[in-house]
Length: 251
Image 1 (tube, one colour):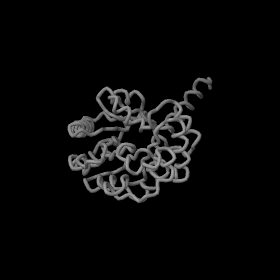
Image 2: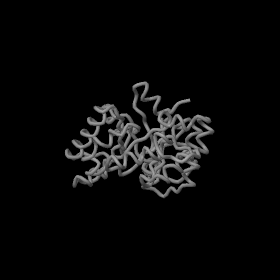
Image 3: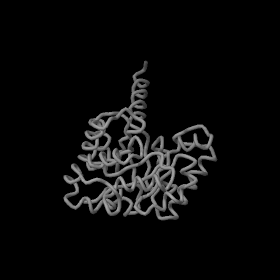
Image 4: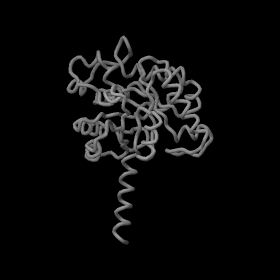
């Protein structure tokens, strides 16, 4: 049994993920069943709490989809709890330097590679007793680059050997560069920064993911060579479908 996202990468293909901000195991399962490689449960910018996240992770996994989490912050204890609850990937926000990248790695991997405390309750059910020795092949680890500090320390961040790569947060990156925030930016300064991150990471043999505000934007990023792309959020999908239904109703 392998991580579905890693299998895509092994086959030379990008991973396509959905992004959840609505605290519902049922809606998580509906979206996971659509065929995505992974589904990200967002604890940073949503109203999802830990107990709700656990139910969502279970529902996602049951549909053969990888349950990924963006924790509320790059914090050792929170990441460990989410992994013990069944997360098979972590996208850590606001990683600004090699120290932050190393802390992410420590939270994911057991000694001697990292510093994670032993207690993988749900992962044992999926991966078996040897889970602790296989975290480097079973868990996807991406550090978010979304600040000027992160840009400046990019090479040091991607040099952390047990980190799979980086994930670009375009809206915060735009803010950091003094530009108007947008999930799918058009400002040349932001586009240049995104291209710089992707080029440097790929040159170092690392994976690069990016948040996209739409399926169309995700397709464009795939064509540019990104390894993992999102297709908007569940809240966006629900709102768009509701507006479309209302308009079609003829009122």
